[in-house]
Image 1 (tube, rainbow, N blue to C red):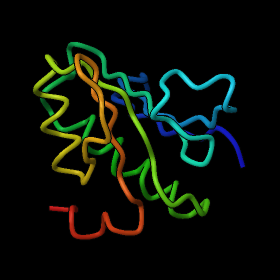
Image 2: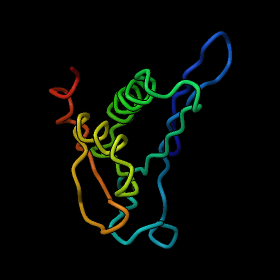
Image 3: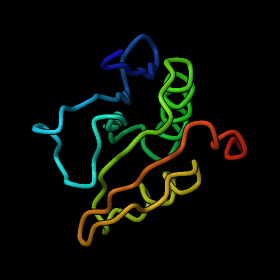
Image 4: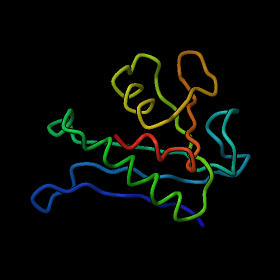
Length: 116
């Protein structure tokens, strides 16, 4: 197991991507992280934001994580990024800790009710 991700395309052009990466203890970006849970990164082209692409990417990433046998995914988000926090929360991510940057985690096996 290792890195995995998904890409969104529009007219054969990549417009967004979400990926997850496992880090060793010594490489974790935050002390709340764990080498057991891949850390998520996501990007959507500014011209395509607000269209649900990020939500779709994260849902597909969760499906991939489940298929690969991971029990949870982690991410780090700025507290001021309210739009992203709303999407993450809708998909089942919950705050693990943090002050200005929130560490959030979703339990992969419990996300099925978050599909609406």
